Image 1: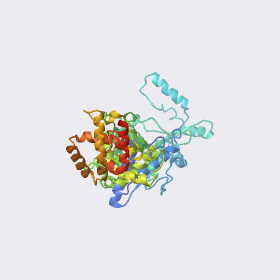
Image 2 (image 1 turned 135 degrees about the vertical axis):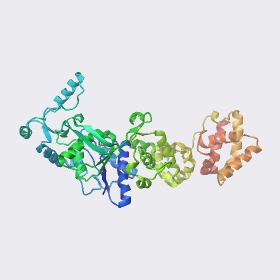
Image 3 (image 1 turned 90 degrees about the vertical axis):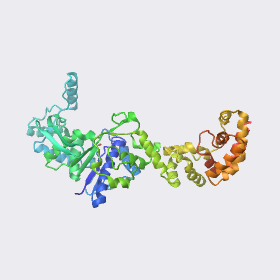
Image 4 (image 1 turned 180 degrees about the vertical axis):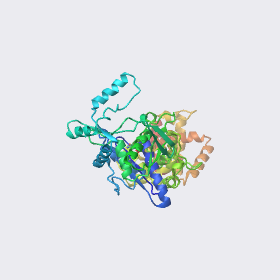
Length: 498
Ligand code: GLU
């Protein structure tokens, strides 16, 4: 069977962890099958029927996010395809047609209840501490002919509601959860299919589109599970075969509560501006609620495509651990070569003003220096946006810190000056040393001969060169700055100290 599945976001908010996991699993399901049989399609469908919360910038955010993640759909609003349009607001006539079809068969009905009445109903029930919620089905028994006449008269505003068969059960099979059974009387009472603004609700548009677009598998967050019985009733009412359902495990924070802003950011934009690599994010998100291979943590997208299947998905909730994601980011950073890592860090460094001011692009020389500086920070970088702060001293002359910063633990200013003078003698050989080992031997020999502690010797020199006690490696920094610039810095520090 050819698998067709979809990611169906509503452009009512920024893309977040839960959303991209849904998209990723749908993408992987199709890709894994395509590797075997060459068939299948992953579809993007924009569910933009909630006009009050719609915003165009959320649509753009969907495109930007998946561009960045390098996850591409086979059919969608931008790519086109045989089942389009892929934007629900461009399919309004279709939904109306199908809703009217159900109405004509007595499976749906016109409702004339005003928003005010529904609000009052809700308030009255609340005041009476009633356990009932949702619509009271007041218009369900209006004679159909009468209702059509009223709707056609164009005076009253109306909606169309699904007539849920009462006193029955709805059953479906979920690929992860197994057999699910729902008492119809417990389903959201007669949900609206067509709203008074003529737009369909999520339920109607979702079912109609999944059918018309030939969707075979619905992988979506477990939050939607309670909507599924309703959808199954609609498939039945239309006489359509429902797709295979697969409700993905919930995502929790480490405290066991549903992941939300309280735990930290969940917006992909924010992860991105913080300096996460898309590969790290994909790798980690692909493991949220799935297990592939014992003892293997790192997966490229291609490896995930090879391994994914719904059988790898767990029932139990997934835990989103920011620390673990951070670890992944570090691992991915360390897998990059100098050139590639520099390319990744560059936009952040430009924004931070590393090359002469915010937004200033590097010149040729600065760019080369930036690339050559990558080995100095690769091991310590957690986020891509940290490069500018760590490497500032290579691009701008650091201020000479206050004298205390130069003074070793059991020493005084005089000792610091002596040590730094010693360090000065070493600048040229260290800056010209072929590598770290050579530099280390040099400085160790010097420390031994002069009976000073290696640490005490290095510390004032480090402060003079980098402007701080904690910095990227000293030897590499000296090599990048060169003898002349390094000596200037030491001399400036000495002048300040004496
Ligand atoms: N538009 C829904 C959402 O925003 C789609 C849910 C589904 O996949 O059926 O998540």
